[in-house]
Each structure stands twice: as C-alpha cells, then as structure tokens.
Image 1 (cartoon, rainbow, N blue to C red):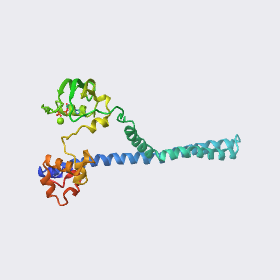
Image 2: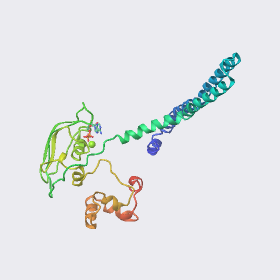
Image 3: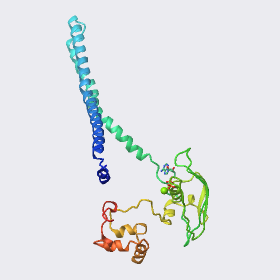
Length: 271
Ligand SMILES: Nc1ncnc2c1ncn2[C@@H]1O[C@H](COP(=O)(O)OP(=O)(O)O)[C@@H](O)[C@H]1O
Ligand SMILES: [Mg+2]
C-alpha cells in the first residue's frame, strides 16, 4: 500500500486502506496480547503449583513429625529438595514464550537451509558466432500434475529470429526459463548446436545467452555499471554500441552526470 500510494490516492481508496490496516493491526494486537498472556502466565502458574507442593509437604510433614514418624530434619530436607526440583522447571516455564519464538524462527531458517543448491556441474557450451537451438518433444510442468509445456518441438536455425506469440499463460516465458535452465525439463531435450543443455553447466550456458526480462531491472548503481552488467569487461566502444542499439543515448545525455549518474530505487529517478 505504501509502494502504491499514488494509486491509492488517485482512486480515493484511503478510507478502505485505513480500515484494512486497522483490521490487520487489531488482529496483530489481539495475537500479541494472547501471546504475552500465555507466556506471562506460565511462570506464576508453575510457581503456584510449586507452592501447593510446599503446602502438601508442610501439612503431611507436620502431621507425621507430630506423630513421631519422621523428624523435623527430614521435613526440612524434603522442602529443600522439592525447591531444587521445581526451580529448573520454573525457569523453563519462564522462558517458554521465548522458546516458542525461537522454534518458529528456526523453522524458517531451516526451510532456507534445506533448499537445494543449484547443480553447478557440467561441461562448457561450445559456441561459435551463431547457434542453432532445438527443442525436441519437450514436456514440463511447474507443479506435478499440471503440465505447462506438452510435446513442444521447435527448431531455430543459425541466425534466425523467432518470435513466440500466444495468449497470456500459454507458456512463452516458460520456454525461455527452460532454455536458461532456471528449471529442468521433464522429458524431451533442448539442444544448442547439437549439445544437450543438461550436459552443459548452468554458468557456461547462461554466459552465452542474453535475456531481456519482462520487467526492467535496474540496480541502484551507476548507469555505466548497469549497462556493463552482462559483460563487465566491455570496452567503451561496445558500451556506446549497446547504448545506440537500445536507443538510450539521448536519455543518458540528459542525465546530470551522464554515465556516472547513480540510479536510485531500481531506477525510479529516470523517466
Ligand atoms: N513459477 C511458476 N510456478 C507455477 N506455475 C507457473 C510459474 N510460472 C508460470 N506458471 C504457469 O505456467 C503457465 C505458463 O506461464 P508463462 O510461461 O509465464 O506464460 P506466458 O509467458 O506465455 O504468459 C501459466 O499457466 C502460469 O500460471
Ligand atoms: Mg510471459
């Protein structure tokens, strides 16, 4: 809501937004109070139980010692032991809330740690100036049971430009994701110059492919560093050529520090 502030205001959604926020804040407050009550009550309750035990020992101990069955020393020793026994339990009860918080936090940390790392193995992609790309009977699904790509075959010869046209959700981006090996295919094969991309390391594959994503990504860095993102060792001429090709020479010319202008907040300081 904060990020989309202008839209909120433009459509007079302030009241609805405030109401939504209040509802969320209220439920957070209720949950917070519940948490504090539960964790706060644990200590006193355990203390109380400990004291009840104390009373039981005093009553029965007193009775038995008056009857002469046990000595007063035994009773006092028993009280000391009972206290020693209940103290650690009490302490655990005191930090029960903290333990719960730690367990919840640990769950999230372990979810991240359990995530599989990307396989870095594989050979290098043999490329010349140009490359032929073929998709052969490719099948793929993001979630098992709902296939997105079914038996897709495509041959892109050297130097050909191919456009994938289709309705939203038909799988155009998915084809690119598969070619970049952001995901691996289920069956079939994808080859570049006859080389199966699964035999090629992801690093080598991606070094040879340039991708322009749907949403523009600009890093909070200088214009120059953003331009050189794909090739850090690019020479000045290559940089100029890229700027010409992407028709942003005039825009960069208007910036106060030109190539050295620092873009902030994902490039929101340029139009
Ligand atoms: N990361 C993902 N997880 C699960 N399903 C996805 C994911 N990305 C895309 N999809 C689904 O795959 C289908 C194809 O999506 P996509 O390739 O993005 O379509 P297009 O680019 O042609 O609009 C859609 O039904 C979409 O909901
Ligand atoms: Mg898409």
